[in-house]
Image (cartoon, rainbow, N blue to C red; front, side, top):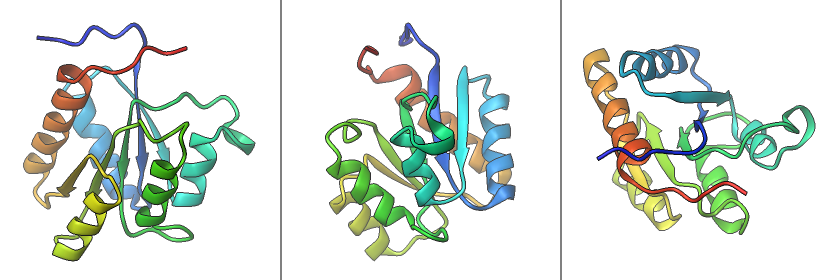
Length: 148
């Protein structure tokens, strides 16, 4: 079954690693996912995007946030806390997509109300598969609210 959205599927990728960004962008393209990928490089920029501040005044509300944990200026833990404590943003699904396999990071992310935690695979084929599964679930299978 396919979720037939009445608007494009917007994904906000929050990651400071340009190589990871390129690989994730490539994975969406190879999966032929009809995604508009928006990228911010740290938590400060991510919150400006989400709140439509400064250079991001025209930013769309994302349907999904892919969030790295370890970034400069404001890390993913702080972004997750800010998103989930903001009534206007709290309903956006947040998938932690990070290299950390630390049990404390996993537990803290779920305690902070992350919707899922995915460790970035090192192997390109495995990363492609992980991105495909994330999109298949959040972009195709699960329902999302209508836009205003």
